[in-house]
Length: 111
Image (cartoon, rainbow, N blue to C red; front, side, top):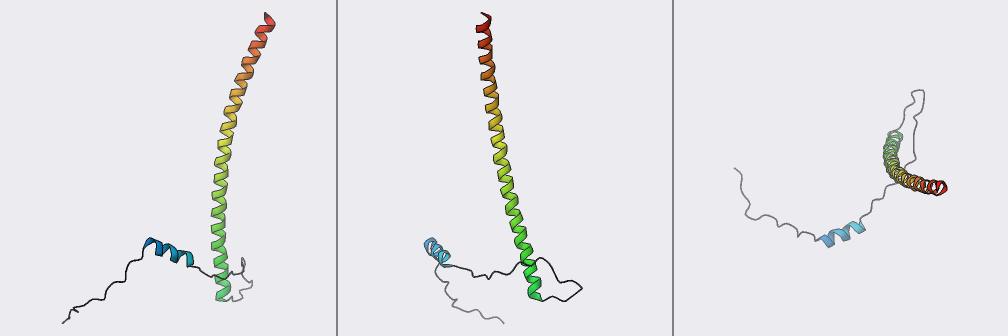
């Protein structure tokens, strides 16, 4: 019923890491920039597939942009929170030093 072939095609040689990296360096994708479209025509006017696609790509890019902005904001919040903690610690140390100095001054005055 089914006949088995005696000879299978040989596999191509595997690429080395260096060859793969060289290929990645030469790999480019040319994507044309589409105009950003954020609205559709009114009054139930038909729109072309290209206009719909442009609107969709604009939406996707906006989502990516908002996620990046959100990540940057969270990173800045973390940095500011760490600075706040650092400043509070320094403030506490300075207050302790000031209190110690005031105590010394008061002792000197009272003697």
